[in-house]
Image (cartoon, rainbow, N blue to C red; front, side, top):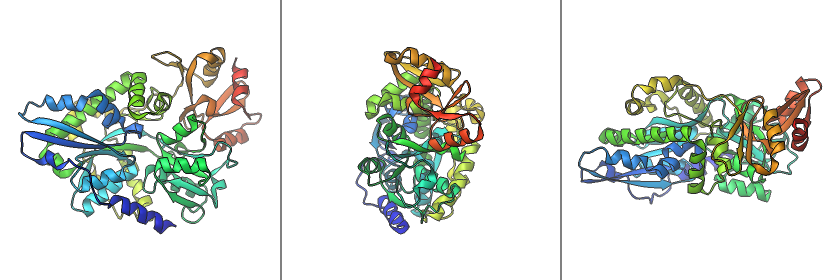
Length: 447
């Protein structure tokens, strides 16, 4: 089972390459093509992909170089990071964005094939690990990780979501190789398998868990933030491209910073733009990318994220997807430091925004924030026909979730939301008198 998953991952990475572009960026002609690989529906990479492309910021920065060349950007959209790595190591993609575990595979494959790459910036991150979630079918009887013993679990081997699954199972006392049947599937295939009943659970990265939950096709079983380990997505560039075209890479990173500022300053508009480009519901995009969303956007390569990357190597080695990786050699922040200038040092130490409950009223161009989930519930109860979406942070992990999909606990006058049933159960067990209540009951108590 494990060998099949590894073989499938390897075949995907080393499959025949058919994409065009990339190498033109290294040419000396008057027209230079820069090929960017991105994942449009992996929405915490949008500042290096979907939103960046929508804003046209990279093209504007390239046109401003004034070096006598004409620049063309070839945007290539993929579902996961593996094919981007395959194209980069073939010299066909110059700049790519992907999650932390795929970034490590990117580093390993680049070195192995003599096409080294480097992590040059970060897109979105969550310091506790909330970008990855394990979900089950809406009517599933599974209520805790230990219930997965002997079950079929879909994930993408070598992805950050796979890393979350492995670590979560190990902490629960399960062997990820022996106690479950792991299905190595692309996110969309895994989502279909969950709906069809051929998978009992699905461990995936942003935005799949939130999307399926929003659509009523899944419910959360495990919040990745329970691991309390950072997860992030970042930008990787080919070493030869960076050395030959440093001003182009710096232009990309300046454009990424502009897209990041736009997302942080106009979170609702940014969510709408990404939704339009991807077909995802804007409500789901905002869950991750909003003002208090699961993902924090900042191009700086923070020390905590580098440390997390080093800890991730062991997971990939145990799956025989990579050997040792020199993470320090892979990380190269010289270009983003130059692109961001004096603000880089400040961004390195900047903390994520505080958690908050939010309501997105119908027809509104801005959300409303509330100090407590109970205050949000009171507002929702009084405006039930005028709510587009309501979000609350998990009482334990801070992970934002849809208010009507959360597990609610009443503890005296307090109403507390949880992403997953197991964490709610743990809270109830530790607080006498607390009990799980329905969302309707929570609304009534708050009104």
